Length: 254
Image (cartoon, rainbow, N blue to C red; front, side, top):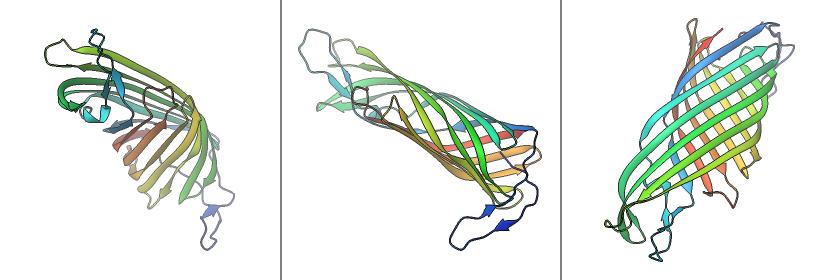
C-alpha cells in the first residue's frame, strides 16, 4: 500500500534511523484491497503416527509430512487494510489445499503413502502509525492470528492389507504484536516489510515478510518472500510447522 504524506521537517542522526517530525496525516478514510498468490513449501518436525488397527500388534507408523507434501491443489489469499489518521485495521486470510501420493521409506520398508493437507490462516490487526515521512513509514500492530491445519494420512502397510487412514486436526489462536511499513526508494518503487511475534495456543508463532513493490495510479504490485512459523506445545500433533515461499500480490488503493 502506497502512502502519501505532506512535506515535513526531518532530522538525521548518524548511525540511527531517519525519523520525521510533525508528519501530517489525512483525517479521512483510505484503504487497500489485495489479492495475492503464495506458493509456500512446508517444513515440519514431528511425526503423524498412523496405528495399524488390524490386530497385528505392529507399532504405529511415523509419517513425516516433509516426505510427501510437494504439490499445491488450491490456494485462495487476500488482505484488506483501512486507515484513518494514524490508526489502521488490517486483515489477512490464506487458504491452502495440498496433497500428494508417493512411495516412501518407513521403518526400512517401502510403502505407498497418500497425505493431504488443508490449512486456513487468518490474521486481524489494529495499528498505530509512529513514523510517517516521504521515505519511511512504521506502524505498530497488535492482534490475533488463527491457524487451523488438517492432515489426512493413508498408508499401505504391506501392499496386501488395505490402506489405513487417519485424520489429524490442530487449531491455534495466538495473540501477536509487531511492526509493518515500507521504505520508499522512489515515487514508484518501495520496499514493504512486516514482522510479528506472539504466543497463545502455540508456544511461539512469528511471521517475516519482505520484498519489493511498484506503485502507480492503477494500484501496487509486490513481490515478497514470506515465512510463517509455529512452535507447538508438547500435546500437539507436530513439534514445529512453517510455511515459506515467494508471494506476488496486486493491491488496489482507494
